[in-house]
Amino acid sequence: MTGSTAALNSPPRIVGLWRYPVKGMRGTPVESLELDELGPRFDRRWIVARPDGQAVTQRDTPLLATIKARRDGDSLHLEATDRRTAPLAIPIGAAGERIRLRIHGAAIHGRVVSAEADAWISEVLGAKRHLLHLSTEDARATDPAFAAGHRTSFTDGYPVLLASQASLEELARRAGRTIPIGRFRPNLLVTAPRPHDEDHWRRFAVAGIVFRGVKLCARCSVTTVDQRSGALDADQEPLRSLALYRRIESLVYFGVNVVHEGQGRIAVGDDIEVLERGPVPSTARPAGAGGVTDSHTPISSSHTTISPHRTEA
Image 1 (cartoon, rainbow, N blue to C red):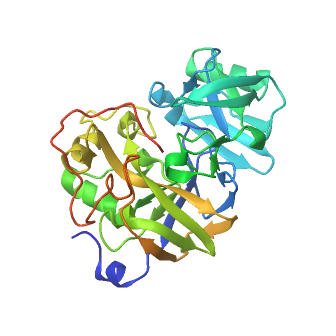
Image 2: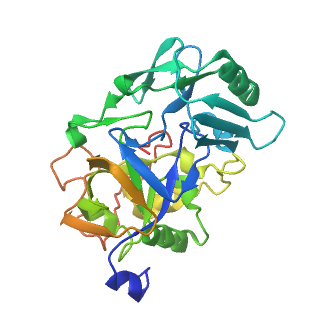
C-alpha cells in the first residue's frame, strides 16, 4: 500500500496549491488560495478562443502549456517560454467585445481583453486568436445533476479539482515511472491514508470552508502533454496505466471535482477534516452507482476503448 505510517495516522492535509489564470496555460504554484463564489480567485478567468468562438485548449493546442500565466497585483502576466516573444502584462478585466463560446456543450460568454493581447497570443500560437476574460455575471452554472446551485468560470465543469499524493504515487508504481502532478492540473494536492481515498470524500472542511466531492474527474489527452515542453508523451502515459485500473466504461478517472460552500482562504499545510464519506459518482447514475464502492478496489471494466477528448479538470 502506498503511504507512510504517519500519513495513515494523521489527518489529511494540503501539500500543494495551484492557480491557472488562463485555461490551458501553465499553472502557478501558490502558498494559499482565496476562494470566491466561482472557485479559486483568478483561476481560469481567462481563455483563448478562435475567431468563431471555439475554445482553445491543450487538447487541440498543446503549445499552450509552454505559456506561463500568473496574476501579479492588478495585472495578468504572460510569458512564452521560448522567449522569442516579449512578455506581456495586461490589466485585469476587460471591456471589449462580448463573444459567445461553448465548453463541452455549455454556452458561456467572454469579453475580448484588448487588441494588444489578441496580437500577442496570435503571434505565440501562430494563428489568429482572442484572449477573453470572464466577468462574474457571465459565469455559468455547474451541472445540476451533480452540483446544483453552484457556478464556475472557464473550467470544464466544476470550480475546484482535487488529487492526492497517495494516488499519484500508486499511479507511478503501476506505470513504472514518475508522473508529474502538473499533468493533472489540480488546484489542491492533498495527503490521504491510501490511494484514491479521496474518491470517498463526499464532504470535507478546510480552514472553516466546507467542500463537497461531486464527481470523479474523467481524464483526457491533456494528461499526456508535458507541461514544460508541450510535447506529447511517447508512451501515452498516464492514460495507458490508468486504463488498466481506473476505467469505467470508455473513460478513465483520476482526481475529484469539488464545489465549495462559502468563501475564504486555504493554505498549504492546512488540515482537512472529512465530514462525510461515501462513493463520489462518476456518472449521473444513482449515488454510488458510478463511483468506487471500495477505496481499496480499483475501478475497472471490460471495455477497452479510452476517450482521449473528455475531461472535467
